[in-house]
Length: 309
Image (cartoon, rainbow, N blue to C red; front, side):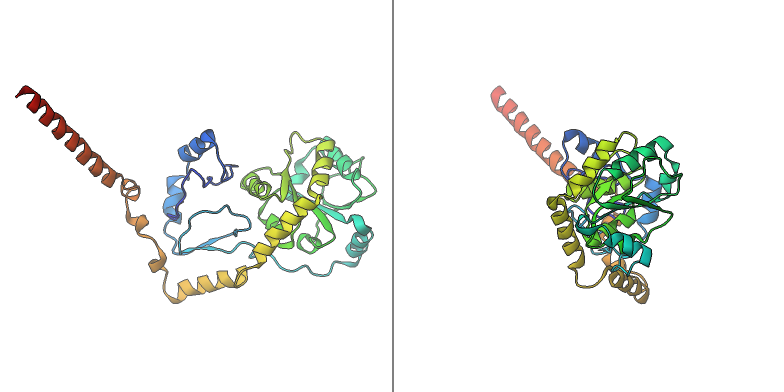
């Protein structure tokens, strides 16, 4: 929106609105009434090129401009071989496969009760679980679950991974890259929005960290392990990979392009120079309305004159 890319609030949800492109009246009203702070828009509108961190595997269809370049997955890469201890644990999962659980550093702030609830839910699934967690070891931790201070997330998202439990941050795009369905437990910022996108694409289910139960977590994992979710995740992965050049190469090209040409003013739309009423052609509509009202006025006056003759 700040870059003057068309964003009709009827089907383009606002940032961090937790809405999809299918909105009812109240949601469209909310999307229209709220917007980006003006000061932030003024700063961002000066950019010649916008590198957007998503791609059409994630975004809802919408109009866009020539200076908007979608480079989602710029940080993604093929999986590297795992360390020996991780590889041994992954292979020991057999046909059931593994589940990756990482909510970033925020998971350290959960209570012991919540950690025990999560551990109990993970213990009820047949898959082996690799859980990134730095808190105290839960008393309900199952034999199928191992806790790590850090895990090579990208390298663990491979064919044996049946589900990825994530907070929905930007790194979750790695799951799209590798075609792994997700269980989203978003907490703040853009995380709820990201997971709403993935749920709408049929590749994720969402849980509320404050209200979820052991059964909710177990059922959510079993749901996304369903073939339908895997199929949707693989379809999104195929879309992600099916592009003329990689996201990184495209980002590098457009940065160098802007430097070589001392900017990219020729790609900026004239909308940046218009007032809000000119952008929406309200002055033109006002002119037409004035003409119509004038014609009606003349018609009424003419009829009135004729009736009095």
